[in-house]
Length: 337
Ligand SMILES: Nc1ncnc2c1ncn2[C@@H]1O[C@H](COP(=O)(O)OP(=O)(O)OP(=O)(O)O)[C@@H](O)[C@H]1O
Image 1 (tube, protein in one colour):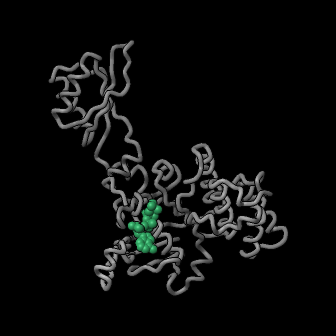
Image 2 (tube, helix red, strand yellow):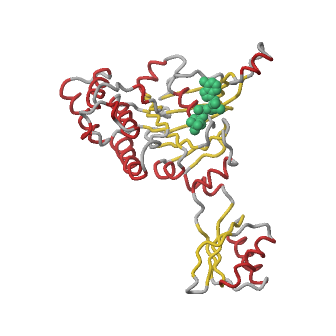
Image 3 (cartoon, helix red, strand yellow):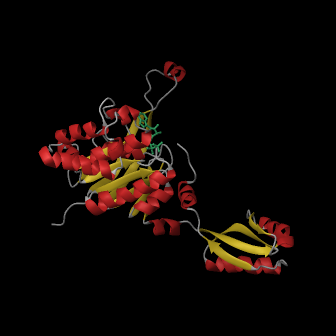
């Protein structure tokens, strides 16, 4: 029999009591309205996969993580972690799956970074040289080695975040849940940290990773596959390339002579297209405009023919990549929780 997937959820539903202002509670004290924050979510994550969950605020990403980590019970649906049902064997799931749900308060602020890790390493059953080596290696890996003698209370948010991940790795999880791991890092630190995540978690430890993030570029860089969650529903899933292909909107760059920019914008507006002058190259006498085309290459060619028929001189017309964040926004309809 083949091994079960690392994580499988099927038809997951979670309802929370609606948070109501007191005035409303007093008006209807005996009604208990509930909001459905997960509405039948199904996902399967293979072993060793780096899987991304993208979606706007309030989409339900953290709730899904909490259910997987046995911190919250689902109202309906099925959950399996390495084939184990958390309802029947929560300890079995806890032994395999470690959540890093940004909660800095769970570190000991009056202990140093090293002392925190040594303490947790002991709790996870590591002893002697093995414990010291694992702690030192992880302190180096998350770049806390220089600050390891300082009390955690003096650390920046980014350092605490890195220490939390080092701590999670000490438990040698088979599945790691990362909730916005680079949220508190500066752009350079975030890039270095992403490299570390991929090499340490997947390449070295062979973990399965579920990463929740708002950062489309981060998800596309790190993840083998992604699911886009919107208001409790998976609206798209697949590789980055597959998601991009779901969006039938392409951007094109149209280069016209400077003195035809207004005419070009008018022609495009008549088609209901917004166009933006992007780069002005006055020395050459040409201006690049950016607009969108729905459909494939044929739609682009048809637009070009209409512009030329409208009297424009088109020096160049070429597709430009759609920013990843825009793809996600299109897939989720731009909702905010
Ligand atoms: N304990 C709770 N009681 C009531 N409502 C809750 C509770 N926890 C979460 N919610 C609601 O469930 C919805 C989903 O929240 P969740 O934190 O899972 O979303 P998210 O995708 O992780 O959002 P974010 O990106 O902002 O972290 C939100 O509307 C939130 O207000």
